Length: 259
Figure 1: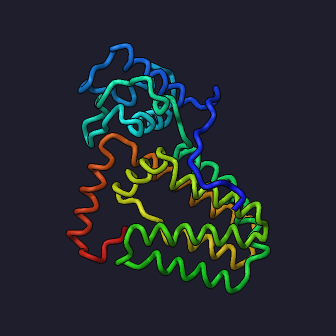
Figure 2: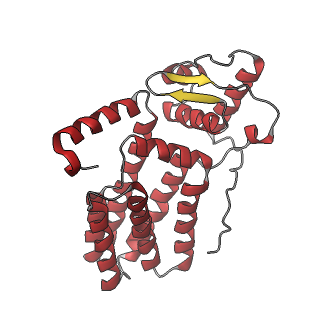
Figure 3: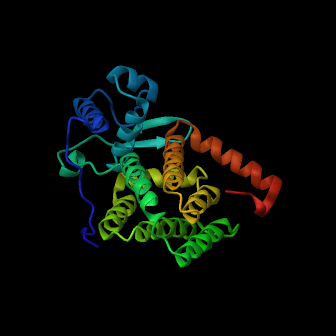
């Protein structure tokens, strides 16, 4: 790989709205506006007060949670866990799950389009095998995510462009090393989200036909859905509702429940 295996803090820019909001909230904590144990305003209230989008508020909450400043309680809200000090950690921000997935949508969509012209029958068979693996009802979370990663990296490899492969590998590396990414994907898993075999099968089918345009569309649709899953995982009470739904499904269908 061309990229070094390490977590890199993202540069502070005027475009990172969630980072500005997180810094403002850290300042509010330091100023004494909130005390340990206080509940922060609801997401919609913070969005209105600071004139930002609700997704930006969610990303800011994830950043504060990573730094141990707040605790998000399912169905209740975000509570101050500790007040900020002067540590460098509290002013450091990494790539968020939304940023990484958005970048994946851009790069992997193009990679799928390019791979359609170069992918081999052997690689197509490997993709089919990975989709079948994702469909296994007894598949553990770690195995499911490993199959998902292998599927996407195989497509990047099929472009026959090592720079494309390096780029996609780096994005997947960030997904598993950035603290903000790790936390939000963990929340998404707890909400019952898993790689969806049908979405991957649509991508593989477009590649089998050699249809570059459809391969791009299918990959972008899949990763847009991943973003939706992440948004769902950050909604207030979303985890609680998802767990109730999963429990109900398991009760009705037992081990054949589809995750």
